[in-house]
Length: 361
Ligand code: FES
Ligand SMILES: [Fe+2]
Image: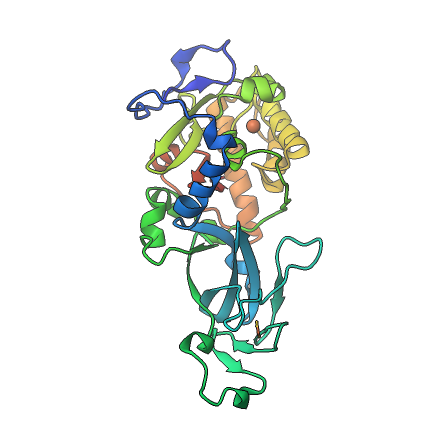
């Protein structure tokens, strides 16, 4: 991770930006190739990493009604996450307490098992469990005249919690509380009310590489001018990456005079910020289909009509954001009001260790 701000193009003048001061790395470090190739290393990750961390398994709104459930598979483990009451979500190992058959099978071609019910029935010998994980029915129970052991009483529980509208699980009973685990990300992101956000679209992809190779590409903006050169024609942005405890974030510094925005929403460069902003917004909408909204694109497209040509970049920015905020408020979508200094610190996207990534629009 770079500790130095870097530009997405190298032609611009550094005098017009407030450079973010990042904590310097304590020492240079090369990660050995075994971290990406060695089976032994992957097994150590299974035991010492995946078994110990909090993992994001879905959105709270995906379990809208009591009885809604989904499964989450990680390596050899499978976990059922279920809403057991309007205000309670619980999680269990997806393992029958009788002979260990998987309770919920992932349908062919699907990534997980989802559904709604009053409990779970094992497909092997028909033991039944209620939403609280209690075994409520054992066929031919009288055939165990000496009774069943205690483990037969129910499913093994997995720790579950929510933050930011996401559901998280950990298989480590001794793991620190979710909130502590997420800091400082949780405190920096709380004002954005991520719990009020919804997916616009989602796609599952399987990358033919080690999981870290894929994630590391999202931890920096250093690659933008060469990997996504199409974006540099809209101006130059000073990008940074910061370590934040076990997590990290990336962002862009605000050009001077545009602090209100702290470069979360970028104006286009060029001579007419009204036009270049609209161009950048339309380009982003059409090509990335993320990092903006229909409201912002529409408001950018109205800038040329609504803002005089002699307006400064700061005035264009203010008008764009004010009108977009108002349009959204009219349809009941209220943007959180966040102090610009806080916005600057929070950056544009977070990597929550080990695998979650969240933008802060
Ligand atoms: S393994 Fe589930 S009922 Fe026997
Ligand atoms: Fe990229």
